[in-house]
Image 1 (cartoon, rainbow, N blue to C red):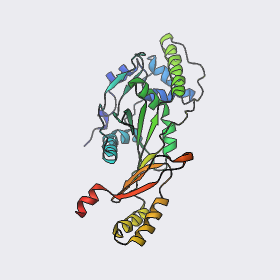
Image 2 (spheres, rainbow, N blue to C red; image 1 turned 135 degrees about the vertical axis):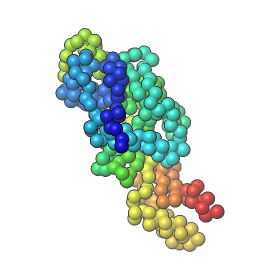
Image 3 (tube, one colour; image 1 turned 30 degrees about the horizontal axis):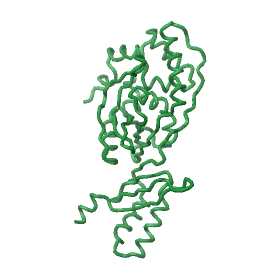
Image 4 (cartoon, rainbow, N blue to C red; image 1 turned 180 degrees about the vertical axis):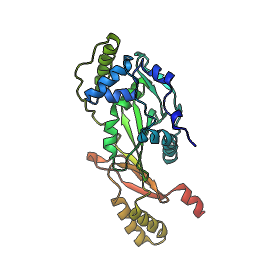
Length: 286
C-alpha cells in the first residue's frame, strides 16, 4: 500500500525553502490575502512550521498526475519536456528560486518553463491562467526565458494548455513585492498591507485542446472521416466541425483528426481552419 507520509517535502527541503522565495510564494504575495502573507512571513522567519500538505487531496492528486500531465503535453504537441525537478536560482537575486516541473519549447521554438496543474472539472482555463500568473512570471524570471506553458488537467475528461508571454510590467511589480517582503523577512519586520496585484493575462493568441469527451463533435468527425469519398456530405460535416471550434483555438486533436487554425488574419480575425486525419489514423488506413 502506498505510504502517503512519504510524499511532499522532507524536513530538510522545507528548511531549505525557508531561505528563498519560490513560485508558490509568488502566488501568495500577489494575492492580496493578508492572512496568508503573514503566515508566509512567519514560516520564512522560522516562527512557524510550513503546513503539512500530505493530507490535502488536491495537492496529492496534483503530485501523482504531474508526470502524466507532462507526458500528455508531449503526446499532444510533440514537444519534449526536460529538467524535471531541477532547482534554479535567479542569476541576480539568490533568494529567488524555482523548482521546475520542467522546461519545454514554446510555439516559436524558444525555451519555455512548463507548469503542470490538475484543477477541478468546473474550472475555466482563463481563470486558471490568471491564478498562476505570479508563479509563471517568477519561473520565467529565474530561468531567463520569455515564454511559459501552463499544462492543465481539468477534472478527468478535459485537457488544455496555454502559452503565457513574459510581461515586463507585471514582472517588475512582482519583483518589487518580493524584494519588499524579503526585506521584512531579513529585518524581522512584519509586512505591511500588500494588496492584490492583478496580472494582465499574456496568453498566446491560440490555445490547444483535446476534443475527446465532446460526443456530439466526435460523431461529426466520425461522419467526416467516413464521408471522405462523398464530397457533398463531407463538405457539410467539414463546415459543421469548423463552426464548433472556438476562435482562440489553434490546435485541436482527438477522434482521429488534427484541426489547425492559420495565424490570425487581417483586422485580428481568426485564421482559416484545416482538418486532416491524424497520422495514426492514416497509418491504420494504409
